[in-house]
Length: 193
Image 1 (cartoon, rainbow, N blue to C red):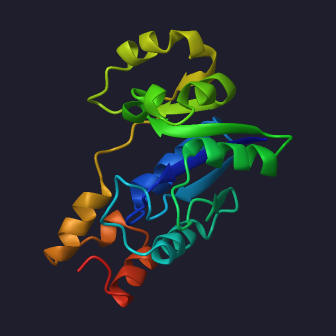
Image 2: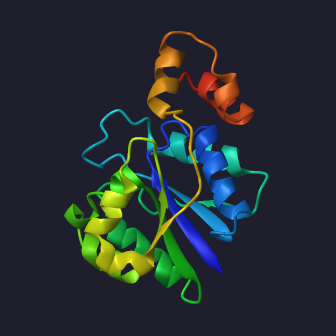
Image 3: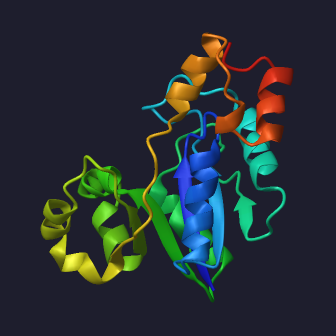
């Protein structure tokens, strides 16, 4: 089985996150998607709602499709690096292929990650292009690892969690951007206000 590891802050998880996973499944890039929310100790994210809220919203978002799973592996009181996460899933699923799903923008500086070159050498990367990325330039830089870099034909829209949080603060309608249960959870728990 091919398992896609899709990390992110998911603050909140929205329809683009779900549809990206669905596209990866339906286009046979992977057989299963595991959403891995980033822990709140991650130094580049200082506006995250509590870990348990983001985990619960992801559970609500995927509840009707058993090809999806949510993992709390990175929800620790210390920073968990991508290399640790991928090692964890390779050990959890020793007979399966582990694919790391990332945007081309993330791939562009993978050599600066902890053990980034090791990851490129030992794992498959499913790369999602964004309109602003120069994917050819990125691929040229990492041409030595081209057999492990798969550029998908998944085209995410420009929907972002930041935009949704701003709309909530401004009391704008967001129902069409979120799973209905996620929307209700946000309202019930007064998140992002």
